[in-house]
Image (cartoon, rainbow, N blue to C red; front, top):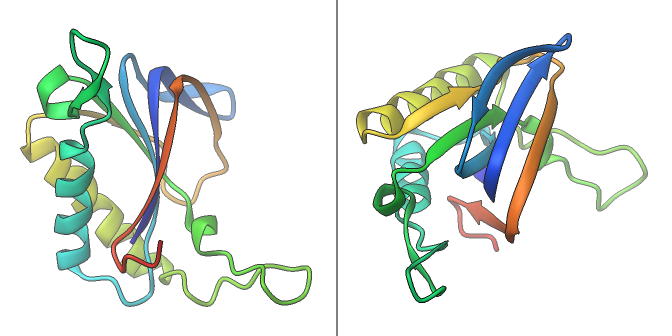
Length: 149
């Protein structure tokens, strides 16, 4: 499982100019599912993201997590995070999960985050979406459950 995490002061996702999800302060998570991912990858990714200490404390030091700040999360499915551009000019998507597995684990990710008490908004799986955000910091991090980076 792979994610791009952005600390935001606001973010929204639109489909055909209709807002399907929006948050104020929190995290925008662009999420991709690998072909070999399991529920163990979902649990690892959820726990890692909600506990990342990337929000400022009273002294301005990044020392608080999403749980500490009662921030929100906008989750957007983005299989292109597994695009392999090392060879040729057209990305290979061979590492990305097939839609049935990806949809299941994407939904498991959302459900797991909700059970942790986080307010979650989403895009729509396999839809063409427009994502708007105001990156706070900017703070942008990359996570991979296989720890390849």
